[in-house]
Image (cartoon, rainbow, N blue to C red; front, side, top):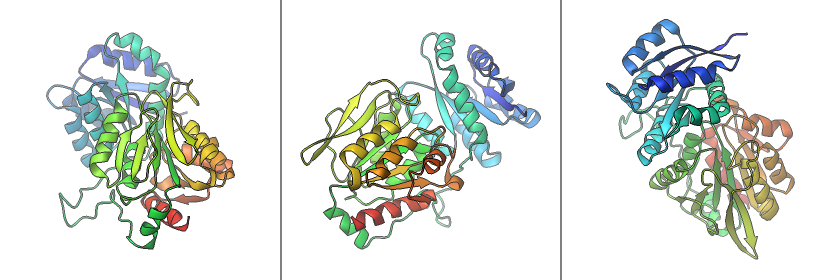
Length: 358
């Protein structure tokens, strides 16, 4: 069996050693080398031909973002970022995902060795997912090159479908995603009109990152986007993002929808869990809902999407060709919980059309 060849890039000798030790415990992974900075890494990529890189965000000589951008232009390959749980770290990591990084892991602030050992399974899973991921390299947008079409900003035609949304404030749109999902969700939300029915989003992401991501989406979208708080109303023209480390569930009191934020045990090893969100939408919104499952490793959300479909919801899965990792959609399709399988660029238009029929 061919092992996954990993090169670790980090200016900390301790971090390079810890990552090598953790990853080498898995029989399917071989750490073929390490580098203290991007200049050494560039030469080692040429000679060692790794399948996956782990890349620190903050390094001397050249920062991780600059190196990632150069790498994706000249030699695109799967990269897992190693980030810190700071506001600046969150912003930089989200930018790295926009530039084409597959995923990220968070570096403990204090006892690095012990902290990394506690998330060893997550680190190994993310490297394995990166090894089979489709690397998405965004093309320049209209703002940087007017001769190129921006494939990340699909245009949803205005028309009767968009107007019908105003009549259908009961509809709840539930979206679940994981690896590759930050960009996939952005693709959909930026294409939706301002009066889209309420949207609830569960993206596998740690605390602090979800708020930064929600704020970033809010600056780009016609709808309002925020990290959910317990008791928030579910309103047209608004999207709520499940906070990292918490489940988000839909609740209903008469005709009024709200969300509850809980720290119930992880489901499918995740908190927030897509299954938890989808199950609650099936229970309280039923046929007045649309479920969308996007790129991600594992099977979280598959059973919940089936529950939504059985309750009368319309359901959509992202297709394999446009997924970074075709795990969650694949499991949902296998279970029979999906009505339509669509390329990412067609999902926003399909949601508009389904709402227009409601």
